[in-house]
Image 1 (cartoon, helix red, strand yellow):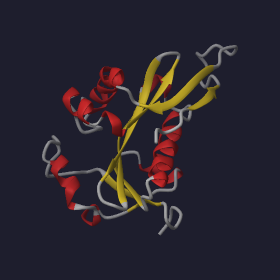
Image 2 (tube, one colour):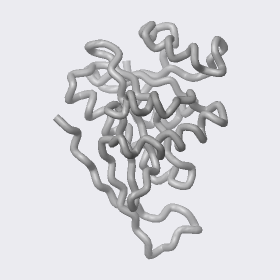
Image 3 (cartoon, one colour):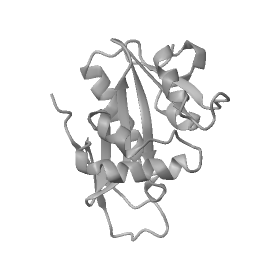
Image 4 (spheres, rainbow, N blue to C red):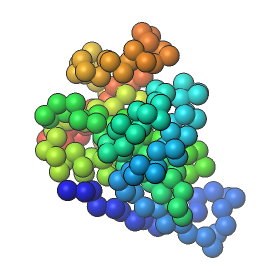
Length: 180
């Protein structure tokens, strides 16, 4: 069953934004046509070594895992929920364009991905991130990277920081609430 789209009103959040302008953000499932925009967003962060680089081929292969944030027809953020096992999934490739950060879009993307995990009966969600504070505000807590499923380490081989990973592993327990 397709995930429902969410539409939310964004108020201007910076001094440079016009005070009379309101933008509508739609959080929805990604479509094949969204791949170039999603790839550009991730590429900009991967170029700063803040995210794992992904090819457009990888985006096309996994487009059904992605949720996007769209404002006035522009893709401004994305995130994916990848199932790892019967009760575990990973939030990955979560990114919002810098000009749109600080407006709740990342939070809305994570909330949509958590709702999707609930609908599929997933009990635990993990992520690897440099944004510990953001995820802690969402109810995630720090865990040992070694406690994560071995399947994810295949992705690590493609990382420019391998084997010296400095990302923070975090978990969210849907079955018990966020904290252990």
